[in-house]
Image 1 (cartoon, rainbow over the protein chains, first blue to last red):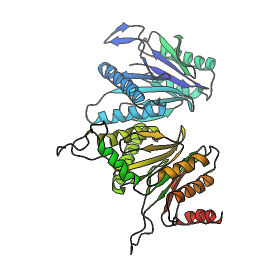
Image 2 (cartoon, one colour):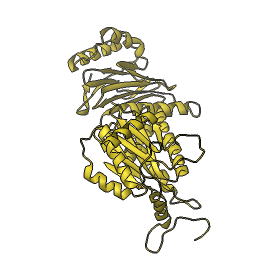
Image 3 (cartoon, rainbow over the protein chains, first blue to last red):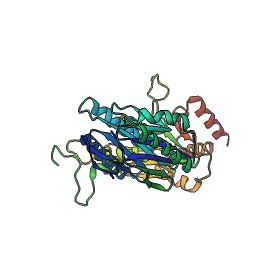
Image 4 (cartoon, rainbow over the protein chains, first blue to last red):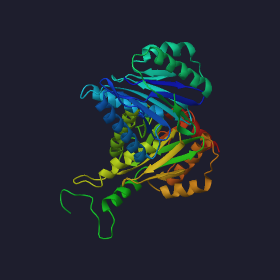
Length: 193
Length: 233
């Protein structure tokens, strides 16, 4: 299962996503980018059953694009998160889609915001969040070491600690973690840990 | 003209039904809207109350959502249909996106709805022009929507009977720096200019939205206060 660790710092949001694509007991691809950009300043990471993931990601990305073209007004992270939640909860009783999502966005008026949506349609705005089986290992570490309004270097240091725990104790060898940052300048990739 | 299609082009390229709808608006009770950087107001004049009627004032200004109001001039029953649709649009948006709709977005959807009635068979266009006022992330907004579905963002304006007199008056006296109280006085004078009779305090409706982003309609007592200060000057 995919691992996504995300934090909110001072005027930026940072993500660490694993880059492997597994099929049964093999690693099919080692450098997969699972992060999808919505607009200029939002990241959407979807994880779950492979077919559902690609279909739902495409659907959300294109719906948001259509809506912003229709209205001419760019969407805020809050709107996108609520829109995704509504779509998921409508699917829940018609054609259930087993995906968990993380949405990380930067708005000029609000700053960075992080939303986690699970497959039942629970929406929660959080300061730090872990998605996947790794959450069992990493959340306690984040609970202890996370501080609000961190700068970039301490945030990356915290991510290194989390990834260290995973490399130490997690059964699945998630070879590399792609680090991405969102701030007022937009989305960018920092590197692979 | 066949029985099923009502809105068709004339030989000169005009939609006669829309022109007639505009006529219906021009012969109805006037409405004034004024926008400044501190807020937006609308003032509506309603017709004389029915003799032996019990209600002091019938509703002419409607709340669409917490920060958006609507009023109009023309057939009041058509206005109610528009209010119902606008309220639904606003709540649908809130349901989907978790935040209040912006005025521009509401206008886009509402004007598409109004335009459908000029493009379908067996229906007539709406006989109202409306003002939609609101205060959202983009600041104070005043929009006018016509029966054809076209809309304009305006700083001040009037619709209804003798509205051109009111518009001329507002053109001379409007300034961006007016406070809400001055706007109301200005609007009342503009309204007075449009009618030969003096406006009665039972027939005036005033709706305000200011920096608090809550649209509210003044009650009888507040309106009486304004009219008294107006008569003093």
